[in-house]
Amino acid sequence: MVLVAVIAGCAFMPQPTVTRLPPAASGAAAAPTVTIPSPSVVPASPSGTSAPIVSSAPSDVPVAGDVVVCADGESRSISGSEQSVRVEGSCAQLSVSGSALTVDATAARIGSLAVAGDRVRVGAAEIEKLSVQGNDATVASAATIGSVDLSGDRTRVTAAGAISSVAVRGQDNTVSAGGGVGDSVIEGRGNQVG
Image 1 (spheres, rainbow, N blue to C red):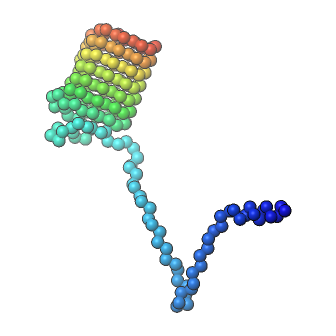
Image 2 (image 1 turned 135 degrees about the horizontal axis):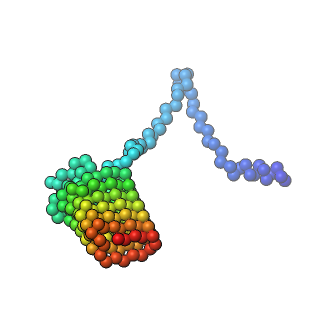
Image 3 (image 1 turned 135 degrees about the vertical axis):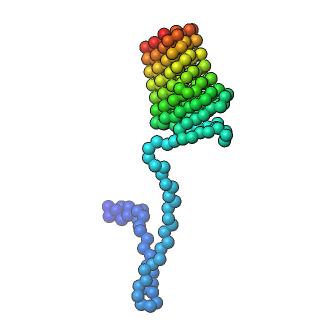
C-alpha cells in the first residue's frame, strides 16, 4: 500500500523530454543546428553623475556646459544631483530641484527662487522671493531677500541686506540678515530667525 503511494507521487513530477534524431545519411553524425535568439542588450549609462537638466531654454539663449544664462524676464529650471551650475543674467524665476546641487548665481538677479530637494546650495546676487522645500539647504544673497518661505529641517538662509518677511516650518533652521528681518512666522523647534 505504501509502495503504491510512492509510485503515484512520482507520476506527478515533470519528466524531461528527450528527442533523438536519426543519424545523417552520409554515415557521419552531423551536429544539430540550433538557432538561439540573441538577447536585447541596452547599454547601461556610465556610472557617476549625470549632467544637470536645464529646461525652458529657447534656442537663442546660450547654455554652455554648466552655465545657464537668463535674459531679462526669462524663467529657468535646473535639476540633477551632485552637480555644480553657474547662472548669469536676470531670471524672473529660477527653479532648482535635486540633491547635492550647487548653484552659483552670484552674477545673477533672481525674481523668484524655488528650491526643492536636499543639500542644495545657492548663492545669488539678489533674490526677491525665496521658497525652500527640503533639508540641509544653504541659500545666500549678497543683497536683500524680499520674502522667505521655508519648509524643512537644518536649512540656512542668509542675506547681506534685509529680509522683509519670513515663514519657517520645520526644525533647526537658521535665517539671518545683516539688515534685519521683518515680519516672521515660525513653526517648529530649534529655529533661529534674526
